Image (cartoon, rainbow, N blue to C red):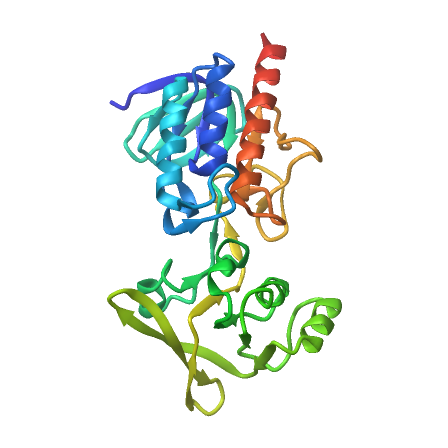
Length: 313
């Protein structure tokens, strides 16, 4: 028979938002339970150098998340390595079923399940993730000063990342499988006027190649979508910008979603459409998607939850 546990605050998901929510909820004496999810530590665990975390001129992504987890534990947050498989928000206390069989009930829930970058699904792409293949220009663009790089995609994200990367790269090749971009006209105009950007139409990446020792990208092989002809493009970095997928599967039929699946919250807060349910980090943030903003929202969610519980009491 499965065990059932109750907590005042259940935090679902880890990463900067989850662990920060754990710190603040613990300091508020709410004795929170945090369930880490399928990827403990979130997207930063697949990032190498992080140079935009305040207080650290350079830190390894996995090391930063280990420190944040340790901080939350020290404050008193109970952290459990499990996966929430279903969540019932129809009545309080809210109920979460987990992969281990344990059932959790909670007076308040903080959702920190994050978002996952969409990838091409190539074995060679997977091989070089974090070593020349990235899905975040603002995170990793700095490492490609004076180098030639490639951006894949055709929407706002791809054009914005290509423009941003010209601050560092000597040349940016934007690869798109069609012959027109889906981005806003103002962004396309900026791209067309930028001498550092070259657009390659009707192409898609066939393979990423590079060195094994040390692991690093040396170029990509691209295939023409109509003729199948393969072309070699030397580059040191490959940025996949085909969008992000918020991990909102648990609540897609229970909470209001917008912008392609992000959880909607009240302006200036982390409150969702259901009282007592809060959302923070990349699960709700379709604009910034940075570790520091996620952490800030985790703080907000814990404070919002503390206020909610106090009002119920």
